[in-house]
Amino acid sequence: MSPIKDLKLIYNALNEENIFHEGDTVTGKLVFTLEKDTKVKSVGVKVKGRAHVHWSEGSGDRRRSYTANREYFNVKQKFVEKTSDGTELSEGDHCYKFSLKIPEGNTPSSFKGFHGHIAYTLEARISRSWKMPTVEKTELKFASRTLFMPCQSPVSGSVDKGGVQMTATADKQICSPGDTLSVTAKICNSSSKKMKPKFNLMQTVTYRARASAKRSFASQCKVVGETMSANSQETATCELRVPPDAIYTINNCEIISVDYSIKVYLDIKFAIDPEVVLPLVIGPAKFASKGFDGTMGPYATGPIGAPSNSDFPPPSFPMGSYSVPGGPSAPPQPGQAFGAYPAGAFGAPGYSQFPPPSFPAGPYPAPTAPGAYGYPAPDPSQPNNQWQQQAPPYGYPTAPFPPLSVQPQAPAEETPPAYQSLFPPPK
Image 1 (cartoon, helix red, strand yellow):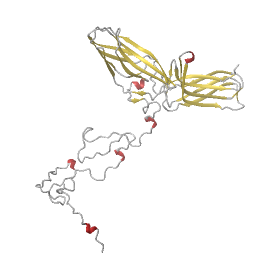
Image 2 (cartoon, rainbow, N blue to C red; image 1 turned 60 degrees about the vertical axis):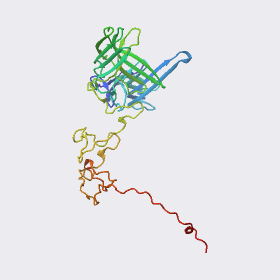
Image 3 (cartoon, rainbow, N blue to C red; image 1 turned 180 degrees about the horizontal axis):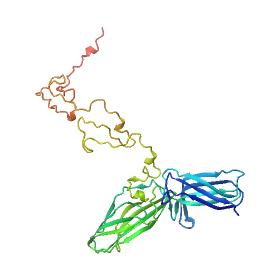
Image 4 (cartoon, one colour; image 1 turned 120 degrees about the vertical axis):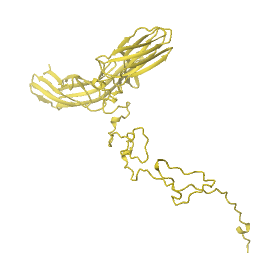
C-alpha cells in the first residue's frame, strides 16, 4: 500500500470563465498526507501544452496510420530535487505552493475531437525508488489571444444558378458561444420548381499529419424555412444560435484547425442545390463584442512557418498620424510647408527620417524681362525660334539658358590631300 494519501492539486482561477491565456501565471498548492516517514526521489509540479492527432485509413495490407504531435511548452517546478539516495519526508500533512508562468507566444486554444486534441494540463508527480510514481492531473481551459479576427461587419454572398438568384447576408462575422446570428436570404425563383430555403451553422475540423489531411463536419444549428413556389420572389430571415459549449475557432495550429461557416442553400428536388457559404469566427465574448480589426493579440499571425508581424520589433520612430494641409486629398501647393513628413511602408525609410531641406520651399519668382539672364532677348523673326517662353509651373524659375537659335548646317566638304604631299619623291 502506498503511504501517500489525499493527493490534491489545487489551482487559482484568474477569471470567471476559468480560462488561461499566453503569459498568465498558474498558481496554487500541492497537498498530500504521508502515513509514515517516506523516502521520495522527487516532488514536483508542471504545466504543459500539447497537440496530438491520429487516424487510420484503409484495411488489411493497405491500412495506414497517421500520427502527429506538437509540444508548445513544458514548465516545471521542483519541491524535492531528484537524488540517488532519495529524500526522507516526515509523516503527516505536506503542502507546497507553486507558481508556473505560461510562456508568451502563438499558442492554439484547447480542443478535443474524434481524431485529436489540444490539451493543457497541470500535473503533480511524486516519485519513489522502485515504485510507480503517484500522479495527479487536472486539465486547464486555454484560449489563444492571437486568434485571427476579421473586422466586425456584415458578410454577404450571392449565387445565380438554373434560373435562381439568391443573396445571403449575416449581420456579423464574429461571435462568441451563446450568441445569436441573424441571417437573411433574398431569393428570386424564376424556375418552374418549388424550393425550400435552409440555414446551417457548420463546423469543419481538419487534422493534418505527414502531408495528409482528414476532415470532419458537424452541424451546430439548422433552421428550415417555408416552401417557396415557382416563379416568385421571397425574403427569408432566420436566427441561428451558436451553442454555448462551442469551441473557439482555431487557425494557429499546424496539425489541427477548426473553422465555422454559415451555409445558406435552397433545397430543390432532383436538382443541384444553389448555396452560399458565409465565413464565421467564434472567439471569447470580450473580443467578439469589441469587433477587433486584426487579431486578438498585439500582432497578426501569418501562415504556418512564415514570419508574422509579431516576429519583428516595433518601429523606433513615432507612428502618429500625419496630416497634409488642405485635407488628405488636396494636392500640394507651391511653397507650402508640410512640417512632419508622412511615414513610409513598414520596414522602409520614411520621409520623417530625413531632415527638412535647408533651402526655402518657394515660391521662386521667374524673371520675365528681356535679358534678365544676361543674354540678349531672342529675335522672334528667327524661323527656328518657335518655342516661346511660358510662365514656369509651381513657382520654379525657368531654365538659366534660353533655347538655342543656331541654324543646323551641313558639314563642309573636305578636299583629299595630294599624293605628292603624302609621299614626296626621293632626292
